[in-house]
Length: 329
Ligand code: UT7
Image 1 (cartoon, rainbow, N blue to C red):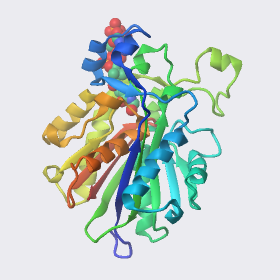
Image 2: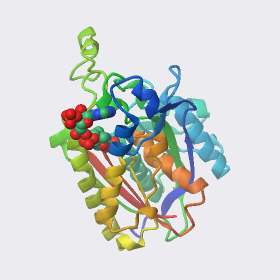
Image 3: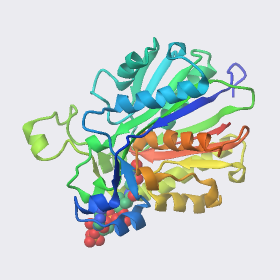
Image 4: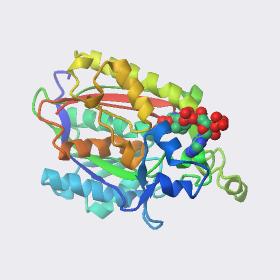
């Protein structure tokens, strides 16, 4: 932390998942897949799916309320709301604006769109804004209704994703605590490996784009897989080194919950016992920007995070992007 900056960290967390559970066995009835394939290739057992009339801001609202409740704060105390999502309620206004109105906040509001790396990116931005004393209280959310952009006829992607929201309230913390550093990056050479082809300015929505199913998420899974382990490991090592720490100092790693095999491979490279990795993707699948704050909230509420613990958040995703952030609780 530079001398003119104050320490910034997470004051409270919250999360929310829709009630409806979609199991691997349910998926067996929808596409040519099996519970065995999904579990052994991904580690996912079930995921939550939002009702048709539920949008991303609805999930985000409950997660934000939970974080405010934990902090004993009112939405009127928020200065800024940042929502990270690839499934906004509408392309504009941003989902943070919709959420601001529903929370009854007077805060500034904007979205960040970096796929699964979005929450770590938003947390880094919020941390800097609090550290510089520009703002006092920022609600950072990762929120997704990926079920709305999933091609339910495509077995290579529909078994992977789920819906969820996670929130972290960012503010000033005691000296020696809070965000110790972060490392963000992007390699656009493989940007096509994970995307929604149509609905933007390159291929505007048309009857043809819809007929060709270009409004759904597409992914080159093996390509993203190869990239993921390297990106998470390299950026984690960098951020740990920059914070003047070693991998053995990390008490808890919260990796992006995409695939158990990716997490296992990262654990091997980190030389950190697997017990120190938080893993909840069996129950929720890949919830993109929501995956890390959802897992973090589970860790906080489950008593897995103690004051003074060193926590490493590490993610990768569309872009192809990566981001790791380290903090002392
Ligand atoms: O959040 C960031 C974005 N996403 C990711 O992190 C995903 C990263 N990638 C992955 O997790 C893995 O690549 C997947 C889980 C997506 C796929 O696993 P894989 O071991 O890389 O499988 P694959 O794509 O190489 O496919 C192997 C086989 C293929 O059949 P053939 O060609 O060998 O006969 C696929 O057609 O598995 C088949 N397959 C399936 N079989 C049953 C693909 N999806 C399924 C399925 N059920 N759902």
